Length: 448
Ligand code: PEP
Ligand code: CO
Image (cartoon, rainbow, N blue to C red; front, side, top):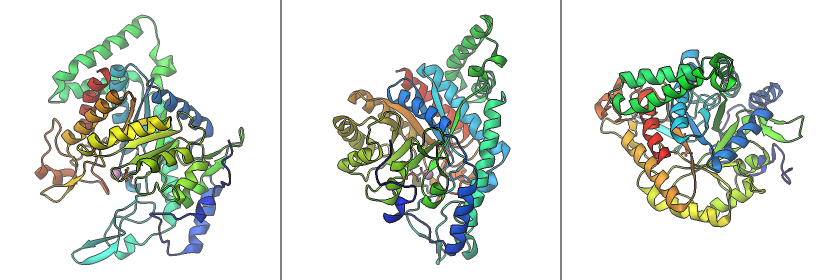
């Protein structure tokens, strides 16, 4: 179990991409010491349960639904925002559970998704060059020297915002708010209100019948934890290694190391170098690990990543999240699947149909279209079917709010509507309606 030559700070001897040049090193160390003394955010037992569920998804017996903001914002750490994001994920999961006839693992990009890798270290506006926004845990998105200067205190703020978010998530998922009946009532409302409602009515009616059946045979919904409570998992990109190290704790029962900042950590497309600090850090913690794979990858490098991060080839440890875009997926996913299969790598395949489909609209907004996203999802299902592998998960950037950041969907959001409510501080998210529509469309693919 012990990874050789690993310690929670061994990453420091490896080159780390996308790290922050903190202006006050002493203050930075002091903040990390404070975080290291604070309680863990999630617990080893929960992480172990998730790994078991992910193993089941890798074998086709469950499905992973992961979604949330590209970058969470501190000022959006409110009960309504968190509730609405959780609500849309739960609604999608009921649709997918029913269609796919298997449990859906519900996971937010939430309670810690506060740090972003950037393609450029600086941003230029009207000739003024400032450091890029790197997430609320580093600097502020406002365009001024002061706002963009990294501040270590933000790491501590990140911890406390994650902690508040988790607290309300735990209350919602245990307090009956997330009961199957409630979620179904929300879905019925969506079907009633949505333009394309008719096509979803049949599925909604079938779910209704299943619920009525359970009631008739005497399953008391309020008393039944399977119906009244849900497990909701958290995840974020493990980018700022000092922060992740500070939350890495040894489980008192087993002696195993877990990064207790979230249940699942993923490694980004820009930070997954086999000889880099992020891979070194992640190889020693026993959380499940997501690996983003974009078009710029090397098959041999991916196999080496699997060997390093999952030396015992355990199912449930690795989620390979491909994000190629609607065109490139056709050329890139089949060889990747074959290569991993030939290598014998046990992975859970997931698809992020967001990051390969971003473009700048004529109105100069960074956007994505629902039809492009759907096209990549369709190809994802088709390709895995053809290769004999299992499409076991999906990864979205979404919000429960009524934003106008992605084009298309039944609301027919056009380029010129983007300005109406474009509020993301990073990438464009699907709004609640677009997310639900996609869930209904994916439910057909799951059935197929
Ligand atoms: C993200 O998930 O927001 C992200 C930056 O993804 P990637 O590393 O795949 O570009
Ligand atoms: Co993003």
